[in-house]
Every structure is written in C-alpha cells, then in structure tokens.
Length: 154
Image (cartoon, rainbow, N blue to C red; front, top):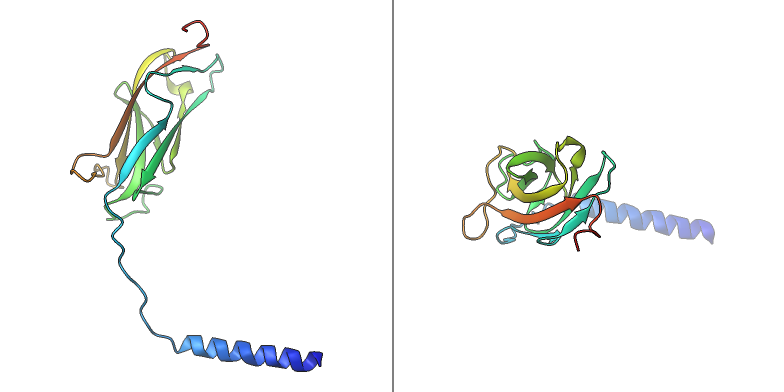
C-alpha cells in the first residue's frame, strides 16, 4: 500500500512539473505605487537626547517610508524611487543608509553636545534628489539637542 501511495505521489508531481513547463503566460504587470513619502518618527522635534559620555555612541533616527526603495549604492540603476538616505547635521554629511533606521555615529562629531539641525534626504544612486508628489526633494528635518544627561535640562 505504501509503495502505491509513493507511486501516486510521484505521478502527481511529474504531471504537475510537466504542466508548469508548458505555461508561458506572461504574468508581469506594472503597479502604480504612487509618489514616495518619508516621515522622521524618532527622535521627536526639539527632543533632548541623552548620549552619555561614551565616545562610540550611536544615535538612531527612525523613519517611516512608503513607495521608496532603499538599497545599497549601485543597486538601483535608473529607478526613480530607489536609492539611499543621507543624514546631515548642521550642514555636514555624516551617514548614508539603505534602511529606515540611520545610526548617527557621534564619534565623528567634534563637539557632540549641543543643538543640531538634522536633515535626512533621499537620493538616487547618482546622488540626485528623489522627488515627492509635488516635485520637491524628499527631505525630513528635525532640531534636537544632545547632552550627557537630559535630567539637568528639564
């Protein structure tokens, strides 16, 4: 009985596989995903962020995106809604990321305590801005203050 079951299973799989080989229907379709969006979720505007005194501190910036394809440099080619995120602090480029979380490595900041204007922009592989629905560069900004401890500043 077991041998019969195995034979039936083998015959079914063979018929399935043969049927798949003859299927030449093109199922590729284009989906309009709409314009890309990006929102900086954390830290919030005006936040005091306690970074302690560890020189290797990383400060995460968390973004929510849609219709934006984040990939490592060189992967996107000519795709218009594909690229990376750049993190600027006080007009100086610090990080590049291909994920929705950018860790700002504060070890590269000379004076890492104080107020910072953060700008995160989406760019293509070629470094061109990725545009939103209005044709403006896709950018999120935030002003934060970093301190050893935020308890004293409350």
